[in-house]
Length: 307
Image 1 (cartoon, helix red, strand yellow):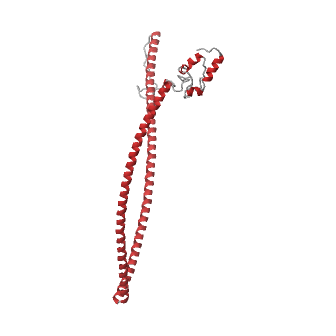
Image 2 (cartoon, one colour):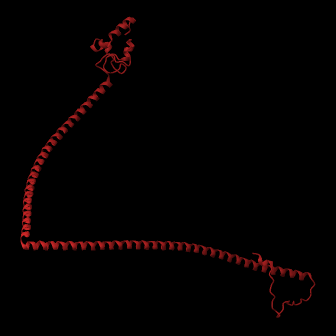
Image 3 (spheres, one colour):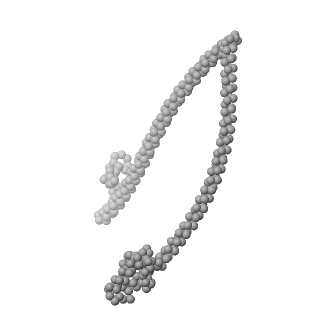
């Protein structure tokens, strides 16, 4: 549908007011159109406003000019809300039933508790009555005992036997007091002796513990000294072995030098004999004093101090 003039369009837009939409004065050809179709027809609605006042904006409303229809999404949401409401109603009904049951149970329990309290109260009252009677009887008996004792005292004051009896009682009481005092003094002396012995024992134990501690310290120090001695002895033994090895090496070198020196002298003598004219060898006399055939001591050479 196209408008012939702008005046006609304004007149149609004026009819499409909120009051006309809600009262149902809009024609069906406009009600059955969606937002895009209305724009194509020339009816430009504000997108974020609600023309039919149904709670859905014009862009999201399937029929922007029909207040009774809000689209599939709205129907789905309404059905979902209705289902939630029904479930909540069922839960509320169940809770109310439970509450009624609990109230009935509590009322029954309260009645039972009241009956129990009344029974216990009656029993306590009976017990208290019995106790009161027993206390009254005890008071009467105590009063009678006091009167009897007073009568006996008065009788003892009047009669001779009573006076003798009171005197004996007094003497016995004094003797008992003295004996009790002696016993207390002996007990005190014994307790003091026991305390003194305990203190001496503590002092002796302390001395013994100190002595044991000193002995332990001494043994520990001796052990450390012995360890040090063992270490020093091991070091000495190691050094002695090293010196022994060096001396053995020195002796071996000396022997080797002696052997090499003799061999060199023999070689030199042979060479000298080959070069010199042959002449008879004379026996060499020993220059040493004493018997013949005794060898002279060999002089110390520089080869001996090789090491």
